Length: 237
Image (tube, rainbow, N blue to C red; front, top):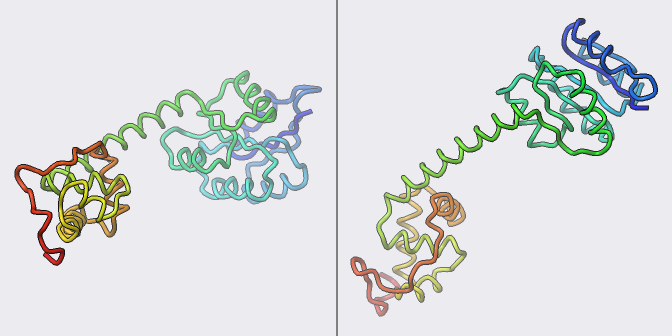
């Protein structure tokens, strides 16, 4: 028998959930509440297999309670019904604190199947509409990130881009100097200049920008025709 606690929403919502999920011999609704302050106590008392939480009312206190439940009772599976496009969707999906993310209203059969699935061990069930919007949002973010990185790379000289490409591979100054036929002093100067232009505090940040922009590709070990520096130049230059 699967034991369920229902929280949030209005009285009509909870009554509907109780009617849908009360299946003799399969699912039992142990308790339901519209008061956030009672949720933790009900969960501790009844030790449900699943807690179903309706966040369509955007109750901030209830959201906080859900965040705490997973820490306090890790064995309890939490299914959240939420509007699409809220911060909670991204938070819950990325932190792994819920087993299900559903866009309300949820068809009765779907809700029953989700309850059974999360108890069976499915890690994260997401409504297709939520998954699609999350994917679209990630793609928009990724395109913006790549575009910004490429704009910053465009501010570099060709030699600085060559140095950055090797830096992104994890090469030290000495190795970069050897590969590009430069003095270590020249490489240090290029690294200093490109960090300034990219507004980076260190080589790691610069490497991330290089990867985001697509610059992280093999670079020929040869002199740049436009900016060659003699390898014999003093390392102090």
